[in-house]
View 1 (cartoon, rainbow, N blue to C red):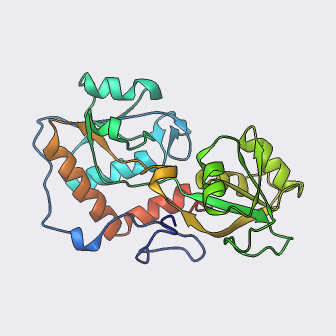
View 2: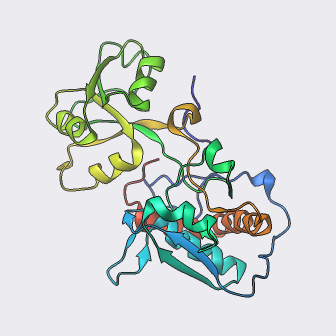
Length: 271
């Protein structure tokens, strides 16, 4: 069976009812790693069209969970940093061309990425979640509970494949896109919907759902289906910077800043 809900330490400064993920191994903590002396500001690159991870704020400057986490990392390292927004599909090329030093954006950690760049451990992952109508009184998902129940998923997606593999008794109902699947769940045409937890959290907390539905059961984080998540990406020659970023992310978690930033951008947690 897949890695079911992520094993988590209690999050510092957590708000009751909001699950804050912990991606750091307390046994991996070591001596503090200092940032290398570059003789200039560390230049972060991001995109400004993917809320809540990175987007343009009211003043036009980049903000979002990834961006504010990057700024917190800079504070922990006591280094000056800049953040510049670029088109998403140009970020890695710009990094490779030394137009920046670190990418803080939703670029999946893959073997292909690691063959060209370095990356920290994940600071965010893409949980898969089940959602159901709150007025149906349905049980939490399990192999037995889903037997004979209809489960919506985007056709040909990793989520559809996961349902087929691990919940063979469920009646999978494919949809062309997430909006169609959400609308069907809202109308009661399927019992459950299984999809990306981040997008579902935005829908649950938004106006379109009309508070019809809520997460049910825990998060699913099987790498083979849903990927490894995202980290801070640097060039291969900047190994010292990558190690310092990794250590700073750990310290941002330890001192509660990660939880503070997370709660700002995820009022409905995807975890």
